[in-house]
Length: 509
Image 1 (cartoon, rainbow, N blue to C red):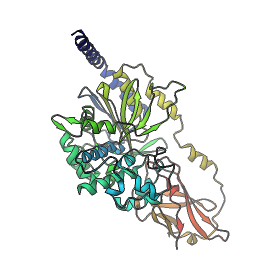
Image 2 (cartoon, rainbow, N blue to C red; image 1 turned 45 degrees about the vertical axis):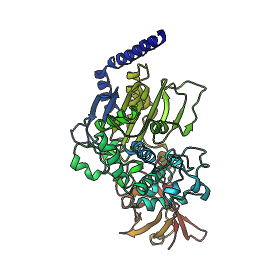
Image 3 (cartoon, rainbow, N blue to C red; image 1 turned 45 degrees about the horizontal axis):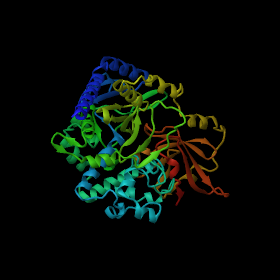
Image 4 (tube, rainbow, N blue to C red; image 1 turned 90 degrees about the vertical axis):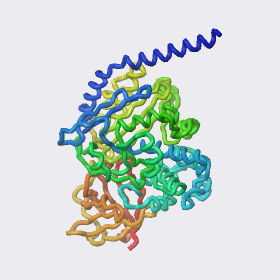
């Protein structure tokens, strides 16, 4: 009888310590810290939510929803959460597995016959788990230039991925692939007869009461209270338009708030149960939180997180944080960066939503976690700002600008550059001559249109028609044979997200 009594006493003590630890957190001090952080980082706005023991114990917005206005965000302000939506996609897949409509280890091609990768054998053996854990062999963000701001349907996008070369062997590495989540969305459509958006609304948003969360910016005006995305150039925040990702929503289409996302975190930390409703089983939750793709951790020296493992599950990033399991993800949308993180053992979660490209989302996350875990961590805001340095311009852009050769001329008359150029992974790209200036046109992505300004020799600067979040400066080279016949184009747009250099358009007219 003594052992059960001792066990109950120990559990009671641990529970009391956890409650005491939470109650000792100075929320007013947190508020002051986040307010200062918003100003120090010069991010337009930031909304933060902290979940503890099943409740949203802290929720506040900072800054302004749009530069030049005075309206402050709050717990219900909507932001695009981008790739934080991937966990919702995996949850839908889990539900379909539990319904017997899918198998985690079932071959993708059995559910989506049009599926085709760079190799027939790989195509035949790729499973649901493979596409959700980024281990099919494609490089990180490879092929995103196909869907970015295009009017291609998901089916048209997926028909092109067979032309993308692998970055490593099948299941032999990690390559974060948005294209594979578009694939997951089409599998969901195939087996349910409904779109990803319809499924996420019916299966998750309505049951959890996430009644402000939407799948398209078309509904923003109806909902109201939303932040404006901003790009950043020359150390200034610039408002930009919302992009509609609903058709490819499985990779990142949700627009949500701190209040709504707290319900999602609480359900996940409650083993998939919401009240009396089981959204997905504990076994499914456990599988989604199991590393399927692992990253190397340097065990030869300490790190800031006391981290011993790091990996990716099914729609979730996984690691240990100060001796606890950490489950989370980040999201990057044009002009908005967000982070969701949970410490399930402590029933603790942090939501950070921002609407700028210089975002303190992880600094805010780590600081909040440390306070609730009782960790004497660094000043994360100061530390991360120090990493950035004083010059915000991409060093690659600075280098290219320094190497410009002035005083040169193009080899040919302007009309000789005009033509249609075809990229296997994309389709046609057009160069036209309008009012004495060369123009770059993407027929399936009008927003990527640009004027070409002579840079040097047969290289032209791309002067985009509109402001973009992920890239700014870029050049386009016309490659010629020995007889000055233009053969193809080479893009050079330094950035870490949209890889124009993958296109390699060949002249076809």
